[in-house]
Length: 85
Image (tube, rainbow, N blue to C red; front, side, top):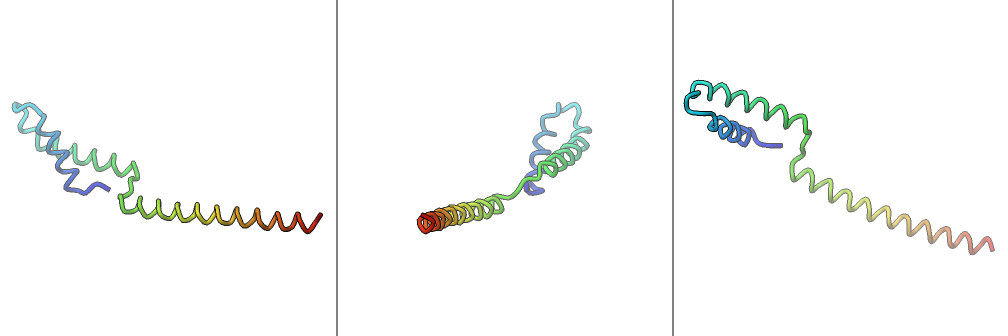
């Protein structure tokens, strides 16, 4: 998930876009932007790159195992069919 520092930096950049005449509101807006961004990101249920890589590797191993099992089942079915004839 995004680091708290990243969220703070985005909130600061958004607050800096507020016109200078509203400088007093910038502090409040920055806090509100930060809260809204953090809440929105939590709802997305994002995973870290590391978690993604681990799951990708697990999926690749699972696919390889399934393919091996399908090959073995086909062999056993062929043997069973040959014995049956």
